[in-house]
Image (cartoon, rainbow, N blue to C red):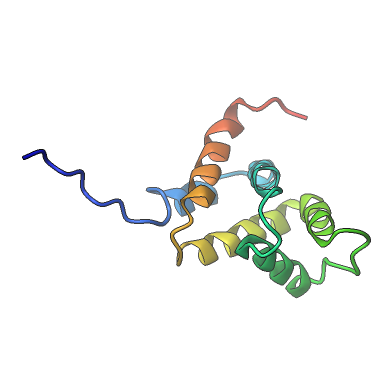
Amino acid sequence: MAKQRPAVTPGPAPNSPLRLNQLDDQGCVFVLRFILSSFRARRSEDRFWGLLRQFLFDAQVLGEPEGPVAQHLLSQASRLEPEQARALLDHLSQAYAQTSDRLFWSTMNDAIQLYPMAPVI
């Protein structure tokens, strides 16, 4: 009888929140923009949009949308200052820590790994 692989517990990859806390300001902006770019094609009913809207309204960053709501949310979130970008990443991390959305965690980990190799803009 073949051995079965142990079940993988959904949630953050090892040390994801810790690694996020170790990023400098520009690293947070890079990771946020990477996630926004990766998630831009999610369906309008996806939880991601609700979390993004919730943060932007709570932070009073969001005004009335001009055009498609998803585009407006992405536009506003991509313009956040580094401190706000870190706060949004923390908000998303806390929300996704309670769910089994592996795509969020793998995307965040990919961005954190790519950041040191990204060209300075």
